[in-house]
Figure 1 (cartoon, rainbow, N blue to C red):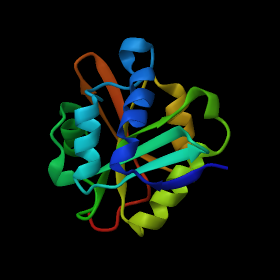
Figure 2: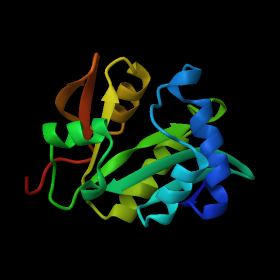
Figure 3: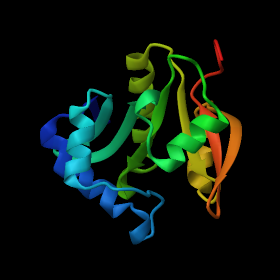
Length: 166
């Protein structure tokens, strides 16, 4: 099983490589700027970023961000569609190395996130074309609560647990 821990600055190059390998430009489902500077800044921001390692190899990463920091167009659209709990957070992206998929890394990252976030609600979006991700998040018990359209794409909004105080 993978070791899960908060990301450290030394993890940034491996995180960037993993995200780049799974970017839309390479046939994956991730959109956005995942340069070393961006990843390093996210780690330094104080928001929780979890990494999964199998020995020396990075096999997964899960980002979170305070809702107040949401500036990327899809995250802002998600929060308009579903603002969530007042103490909620933006969940994602999550990325698992292709060779590690189906080996519990996704579940382990989410279990550690639940412990560290102590019951706070995570809010995430998934492109409706990304069937594997839709199934994986639903399998963990996350609930689909809203939808939005951005450009030509339709997105589903999921939460890690039901609302408390919306």
